[in-house]
Image (cartoon, rainbow, N blue to C red; front, top):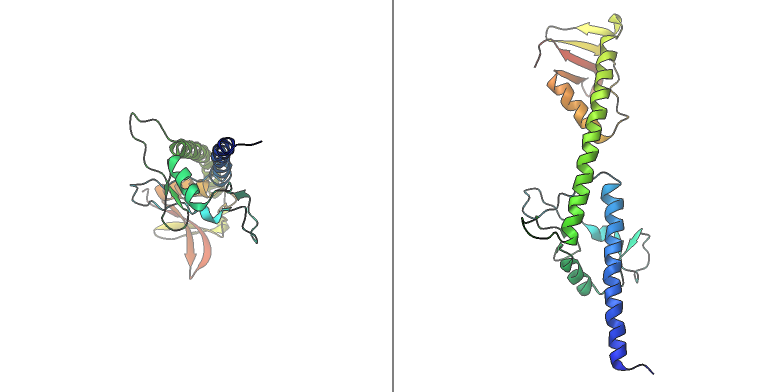
Length: 208
């Protein structure tokens, strides 16, 4: 026969298990939504452009119907869920569940939330460094192709040379593309449009 004490102990264990389940769900979500998609975590309290992560869009309660979602919250009440998220080091917005993380403080142990922000942003930094190297190689190839463009495909103006209809490689990541555009801007090279129509690549006659 089960006593009330045993029942309460069972409920306590159930809560502890669901807290662990919450960590697992969040870890899987962060791997999927940030690390695998090469996204940084910018929602750090105190940052000028801090915007809470609207995690409520991606996680739903098990009891809800009509939604197909990769992730579900453990079966907590919303009040208990908010408290558990707070205990893990997150700042939870007042209305819908969106998350921010306080900045790390020197000498203080990182919370579960701060550890994940560190992991996410380290992964993103490594990804950007790799994409910068890819962009350097692509940019060198890009300059070589411009150089070998047939003369009849070029047109000389007083301030620049137009490489007519030269196709700029867009089959690259957005980060790689951003570095490519920076290199081009640095060297006085740009995509050229007239009346919204792409005309080619221009190279300034003067070094920037």
